[in-house]
Length: 210
Image 1 (cartoon, rainbow, N blue to C red):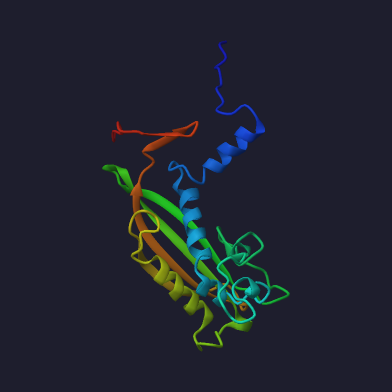
Image 2 (image 1 turned 180 degrees about the horizontal axis):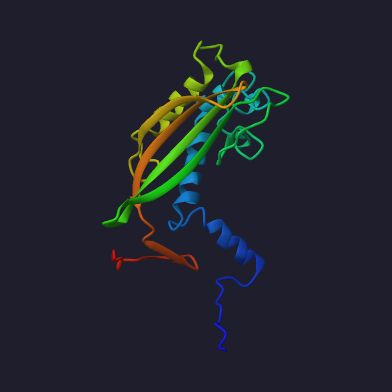
């Protein structure tokens, strides 16, 4: 039996970590790469962060005189235990009032005759604690206000390198604790026609539909 020789594009832990970090930048995996773009867009939107109404983090947005802190630690709003999460998260009833924005990405082929392009769905699920359901400064339901800010930021934008548009905006519910609004944006993207090896990206140009 002839054993297949396995080639690695790293030879130490530093190289391994560099490869893993590259998944967020290389064009091969749109799921990871586009989620990074969403994260950046949300964390550079102070009005959105403010409406999430996390009192513990408000000092990262404004100083004592109410001036915007552009060098604040806004990334604290993101993470598996914070307000913005890159996956669907259905919280249990918390000890304190919190609101969440979750986002997902799904792809499918555009058609059986088009191997070059695919449809992408960007899904935002907004969960607002019913105990803080109305934004006091505007009088607008908080989940509707958050949805409107996201719509303004993403609809007809080129954040993903291709224009996206809002195709669904629905109000739903999970239980008696959270108000929910779900936004779905659609994009058209290239369908895995590149391959990156050792940091070098090449285009696969001989795709044939059988």
